[in-house]
Every structure is written in C-alpha cells, then in structure tokens.
Length: 187
Image (tube, rainbow, N blue to C red; front, top):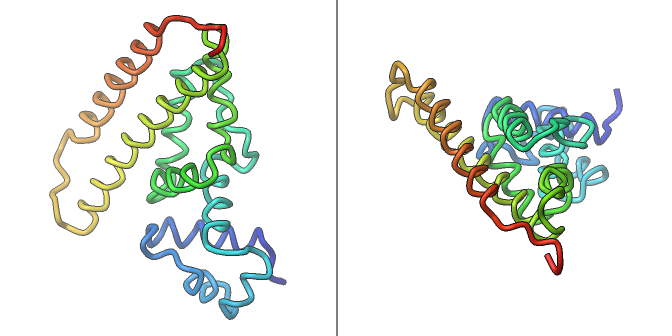
C-alpha cells in the first residue's frame, strides 16, 4: 500500500496514543510506516500541519464538531473526544493556538450562544467553554501520565472526584455565561 496523507495521520494518531505527544516525531511516524522521514513531507508540510490533522481526527473524522443541541452536551462531547487519545487536550490546545478557526469547536461552539449574544460575545463564550474543557481534560491526562509512570498512586475514587469536579466547573462556567448581559449591537 502506498504512502498517503491518511496513512501518515493514522500512524501519527497511533504513535500519539501509544507514546504521548512527547513521543510523536516525524522520524517515529516514518519508522512506523517503514519509510524515510523525508517521504512524509511530500504529504504534510511539517509537524504542525500533521498535528492539525491529528487534532481534526481527535475531534472526529468529519471535523464538524459536536452535534449536541446545547452547550452542556457539546462540552461533554468535546471532553469525551479529547479523552479518547493520550494527550488529546494538549494536541488540540496547541493547534487552536496557531490555527484557531481551523478546528470544529471554534466554528461550531459560537452558535451555541448566538441566540442571546452578539457574534463577538458568542465567540468569547465559546472560547471560555472550550478553554475550560481543555484545561480540565489536560489535568486529567497529566494525572493519568503521572500514574502510568508511577510518580503518583492511582487513588481509589479519583475518577469519581474528577467527574464531580468537571461537572461542578461546567455548571460554574455555564452559569457565569448565563449571567452575561445579552448584547446584540456591536457585539
């Protein structure tokens, strides 16, 4: 089977899930595909472009983002997608930093707030929600890595505590956004 962009993204996704972001390199992806690293650059310009493709894969192959009808459900779907792959939150956060409109949450989440906020505030509300979810998942994934490497113990009840903390924080963020005055003009 010939080398394709999809095969490269698949291999990078697998390396990410097995090794984490620190283990994901163009050299490692090439090694797993049994090709020279230079062969990858015919299909992807650089590692940043590859990470953008992996981030799109993390968020769902369609790239359209959450299909949830409300912000709470969308945040839950985003969290689930990020948690499916090791360091998913870190990859998506990185890609959002250099390609903010390139990922589904940047395009779809503002619509969750458009009924009561102007376009600008809807984008800000969406960013606030996405940043909360990214931060919460990054903390969960960092802790999982510390447990995996034996630096901290896997405490009984920690998963339930993390779930409760996420739900509490989500309620606080959404409650705060509900309190934002609706601005339609100039917003």
